[in-house]
Image 1 (cartoon, rainbow, N blue to C red):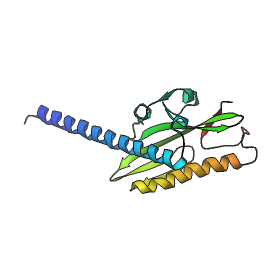
Image 2: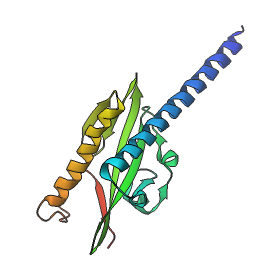
Image 3: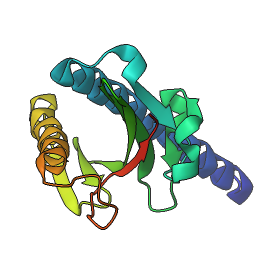
Image 4: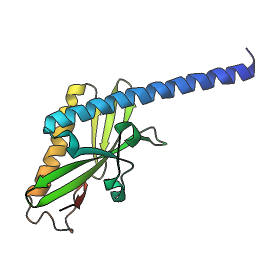
Length: 160
C-alpha cells in the first residue's frame, strides 16, 4: 500500500469514526429528550429546539438534529426551550447544555449552572431531569422571581 493509500485509509477510518460518534450522540440526545418529556409530562408543543444558545434564537425553532451543534472540543451544544404557562401569559425558558460521548457513557454539562453529570446508564438521566425540574421550580418559588437582578441558570423570555 502506498503512502497516499495509507493516508486515504486513515481518512476513511476517521470519517467512519465521526459518523459513528454523531449517530451515537443523536441517539443519546433523542432518548434524553423523550425521557425528559415523559418525566416532566410536558406537551409536545411546549418543548422546542433552537439553533445555538443566543436569546434571539428563542423564536426560531428547529429539529433536534439541526439543534445539535458539534463544537471543536467534541461536545455537542443543544439549546431547547420549555414554554411555561399561566392564566396571565407564558414564559419561554431557554436551556443550553452540552454533552460528549466518553467511553461507554456520556458527560452532560449544564451551561450557566456549572453542573456536570456523568451518565453510564440511561436510568441515570433521571438525576439530570430532577436537577432541571428542581432548579426551575426553586427559581419560580423565590420571592420576586421576575426581578431582572436575580440570576437564573436559564435564559427566560416573557411572552405574555
